[in-house]
Image (cartoon, rainbow, N blue to C red; front, top):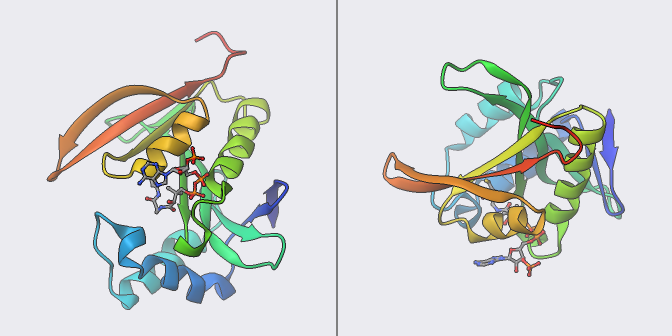
Length: 172
Ligand SMILES: CC(C)(COP(=O)(O)OP(=O)(O)OC[C@H]1O[C@@H](n2cnc3c(N)ncnc32)[C@H](O)[C@@H]1OP(=O)(O)O)[C@@H](O)C(=O)NCCC(=O)NCCS
C-alpha cells in the first residue's frame, strides 16, 4: 500500500519482492559503517520479522518512481522513553538508502515529506533524529531539514548525536 509520495519517490509497505535489494543494500560495508554487515540468514530474518510486517508507524519501503526500484527505507517510527514506553505526540525519523542513490537529495526529499506528514496529518509535536557521530551525511541531512542539536553521548564504543524538530504550530 502506498502511504506517501514526493516528486521522485513513493513510500509503501515492504513486499516480499524487496528481499534481494534489501539484502544487497544491507550487505554493503560502506553503507553499514561503522557497524558491520550481518550474515545473509540474519538479514532474511530481520526482513521477514521486522520490515515485512506493516505497522501503524514504521519505516517504509522507499521506491524510485522513475523505474519502480526499491532503494531503501525511510520514515517515522514511535519514539520511546527510557522505560520503553511510546511517547505520545512524538516520533523518530530515519533514512537508509542504498549507496548508488546517495548524494542526489533523496533523503532530504523524503525527510521533508515525512516531517510535513508527521506534523500536519499525525499531529506530532516533536520529531527526533539520532545518529552515529561518524555519519556526517545523516547529520547534514537533518541540519538541512531544520533539526537542532539536543545532546551527544557515548556508549558501546561509539559516539552519537541527538537532534530534534518541534512542530511550530503546537505549543509544547
Ligand atoms: C545518510 C543517508 C540517508 C543520506 O542520504 P542522501 O540521499 O545521500 O542524502 P542527501 O543527498 O539528501 O543529502 C546528503 C548531504 O550530506 C552531505 N554529505 C555526504 N557525505 C558527507 C560527508 N562525508 N561529510 C559531510 N557532508 C556529507 C552531502 O553533500 C549532502 O549535503 P548538501 O546537499 O549540502 O551537499 C545515506 O547516506 C545513507 O543511507 N547512509 C547509510 C545508512 C545510514 O547511516 N542512515 C542514517 C541512519 S541514522
